[in-house]
Image (cartoon, rainbow, N blue to C red; front, top):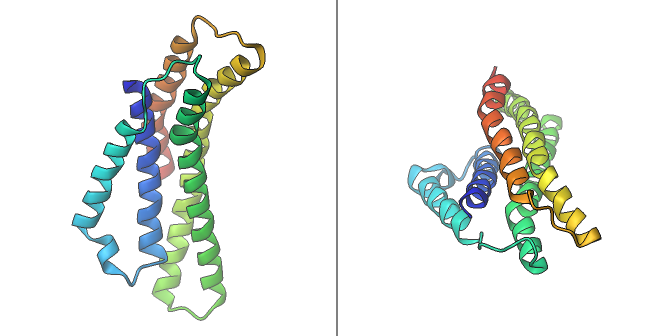
Length: 172
């Protein structure tokens, strides 16, 4: 339960980061969306949701598997992808219009950061692929591997351990 809740909190923290970038780039005139109390409230909600939506469900429960997979893995990644796609489209549209020079430079910097974040999202996507593959294997064959929890723990541990290293490299 704690591993899945940690993964859910990690994915939802990247959703929160995507929303922060959306507020900063697209809704930059709405300063209330960028205040500390508002962001802090979103962080508390993110942690609460991360631990609440992950209910301990065994791999043999099909509905529980779909629920966990959807809310921990698929919904956050789809949300992040949609938000960043919208931001990139907005920045490209802004570059064609007459925009102040300093705003255009800020948009270009944000575009570079978004490209780096997309690399990070690729890593987050690959962290969940072995577990998703094992879910599919169970659905197709009806056979649950005895070591499924160990494989899941190993892939998530490697992915989460490599995440800070990748963040350091994409920052520079």
